[in-house]
Amino acid sequence: MAINKLYITPRKYKSLSDNKITSSNFEDIIKSDILLDYQTSLADCQSKNLDSIFNNAQIIEVHGFTGVESTENMIETNYEIMFLFNRLNLVKEKVIFTEFDPYQRYNYKDLIYKKSNLKPTLWVGGCSVSNGDGVKEKESYASLLADKLKYQLVNLSRSGESIFCTIDHLLRADIQPHDIVIFGVTNFARHEYVRDHKLIGSSFGVKGDNFKYLKYIDLEYFESEVNALKCCHQIFHIINVCNNIGARVIIANILDITLSPIFFKDCENYIDFSHTGTLDTFIDIGNDGLHPGPKQHQCYFDKIYQKLIDIYPNKSYNNE
Image 1 (tube, rainbow, N blue to C red):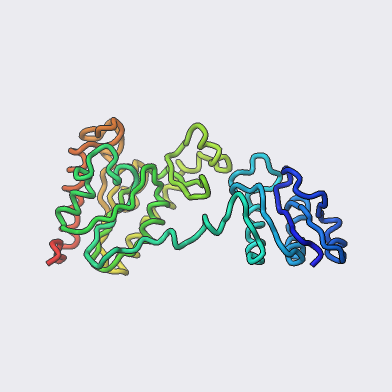
Image 2: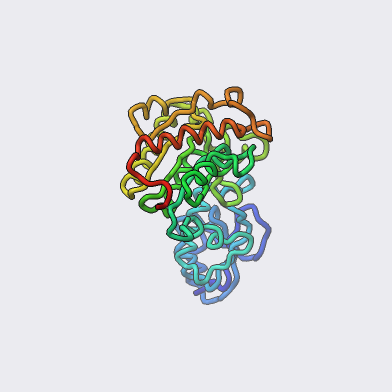
């Protein structure tokens, strides 16, 4: 190994070594008998040469990468940075990450939702409405259902959650036979993006500083028929998975005012609240002035509970 310590940085980064590796000199450096410290960037050495250079370094220190989405002042693209992390993974035993450690951030084990016990569980997924924003916890439709059913409640809903994030949460949940799943359908135009190295669900048309995270996306796509139909297809995955598990599932359209009532018109698991899917059509308004109030949540509860009885008439909901 001709390279003692190799500093990997963005191309526009301060000098950590006077010795630089490029695509034109790396072969001579590898063949050299003199052990020195070097600095390079993906833009300088080129992606096709990374493996050779990394294999001939004793220690690799990675500096200057705060995340794959923070490339405003870098020549490297997001894809190239992710590729760089991938190749570093092949020699991870000798890699030291300084500002940002992908092994601490990216870990599928952090995404697993396990039940704490074997009691029947009500799983709820959705956006701020299903999360109960604007009402007291006991007034939300999720809590009303859990109390009525005498099920323990696991509410996976998040404010601003997109359809795809909700599906992601529910498909990773530890749903068991005889559990109940309520999917509170939100606005289809919502979309997830990456912030602080995490996948975030957010409302369509994010303003201010957050807009930079959507700079690679054509925002008109999210109000298109293509996206609406993709959302409908993805929602059906939840119905299919729950049916295969033996869980009961209700798709409650809270906020979608596009195609889902038509798409699911013959689906017994679907209930449509799109006539009250906007702020000016809620029965009442919550204490934050933005979300449905207790009366609207009571309406959600009444109709979802009745739907459960209608399509699962032989099931027990009292844990007996």
